Length: 158
Image (cartoon, rainbow, N blue to C red; front, side):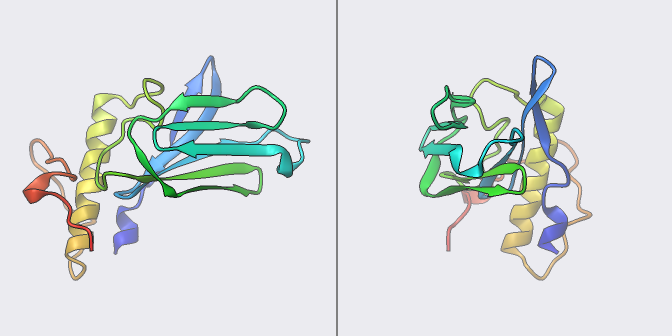
């Protein structure tokens, strides 16, 4: 049932008419997806993840992305992989349940309506995680959705 509350679609960050990356999030992670340029050997791609910064590029060239993150991440649990023609960066949120409006600080922010939808989806994901015998996939909120990170004393790690 929890998979019903997984991200249904990715968000796109577009700059000057070109897609820079796509991304989605769960309670614990933010995932970034960068389409790799063709005809570049895979071993030349590089990604460096710091607690508040990410850098992506091709070795020997200026970075493609070199930006601060919206929120801090756990570097020991964050990683990147190359899957087909996509670099997949998994950022482990330092604060589980925090709703990110974008992976990159000040860039490609979600509009308030979409941010609210993300917060509602994460809140339902939290309810599902805390109550595995129930199906929250059809649940809806009337009015404002509480913050999934702080609601009722916050998320308790197991």
